[in-house]
Image (tube, rainbow, N blue to C red; front, side, top):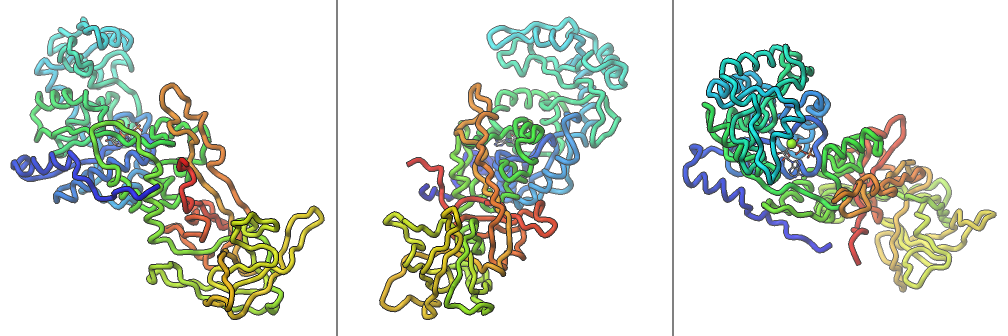
Length: 556
Ligand code: ATP
Ligand code: MG
């Protein structure tokens, strides 16, 4: 695809903040937060929110907190808490002070709830969950008051204490705020703010058997942390009146401003934690960090750089209307970044033996090849040239089409960084498969063109004995449908069976034996590849393909 504009647009949230600063709001402070629920790994959609919150804070000399929004203990875990912190850091951001947890505020949230009851703005409802739903009404019909709505403050305090102390069983009672059962906004029809859950919590242990609901928790947590701009995705727009209502009733340190933006939707991708968890739980992938996953952990293992993800998040901008972004843009940002920083190396995926008949057996010539065509700071690597080499099977054709510029019988081709060779003889097995080529090299062609003739093709190669055997995993898009989970489609029906092709007998140039997983290489003519640390064990060396050199999905 053509190069998209990468200048960061001055989006509407930046403009709001600038205006607030000009008006002297919040005493010139900017404080944002990133509030993940630790119920899964972060995905590329979260990256958009992370980049937005952290870079706005940086830009305006403010702060950004990391706060775990942990009000659903049964679905949350320490594994997710650890993974999320690792991923935010890897993306290049550092939060303000200690990691925070909504559960840090459980005492305060409880006291605020008591306060609401005392103001006669909250009540304990003992209708069943089904009845509550029924009483809530619909978009067209107003709701109706629960018979428990008019309980006295004393009775509510006593029943809330029964909830807190464990006297009441799960589902037997909830605490609701008293707003308006006829509100056109269903979120304002006396939403539940506490429910009974006899669950162990990863942070607070068994201290609580009632847990606050998200909407109630979130606004108070923001206020307690003195957040100035509480940035969230569009689906919370209808919740904003509740956010503001709760804070207006309580004596809190400040009243943050909630601002909504459009979430990132990527084509060929699923970005719902629930669906990603299903892929993991049902073993469609090997884990949250499977290189096919759109998780930050998966992308890291796949060889993405944090810079490419951050650039992508800048490219897509921040708007207020939902849209779908072409995953090609993410891949563009990745290729663009890797082209600049990836050291080059040679790896032959489908080895075909080549014997240089006019090269002495046992003779080695150490060739020094720059690691990057433009960036000298990446240094050089050494590759021994020997009598026996491997080239890729696809770089030789016995009966080539006209435009084939690689090796053919009787013709010449250049070996990258080495000599021009000519194919003199084709050796086949009993089934007629080509198993070896006998070639001769022109000794006057190292680093210079042959005299009196043009050799157009350049192919990659490795020495036969000195190269290292590697397993190469060719990854591609996880879904082969543009919108795998739109409408009533089942995303599982669109898993791309070719999203992983394992090549077992590849041979890499010797320098790759010392590769690390921190930066992808460009395997010349093949794509970008990164060492897989997790599976490179016991002498086995595994490389993941980060991305092909060119977009093969583009239309036309
Ligand atoms: P999911 O719907 O996948 O479960 P979530 O929104 O429930 O995701 P949270 O952990 O609550 O996940 O998300 C933390 C923050 O990241 C929230 O502020 C949320 O709005 C934001 N976020 C989540 N998904 C996206 C997305 N696709 N694009 C932008 N921001 C997102
Ligand atoms: Mg959420």
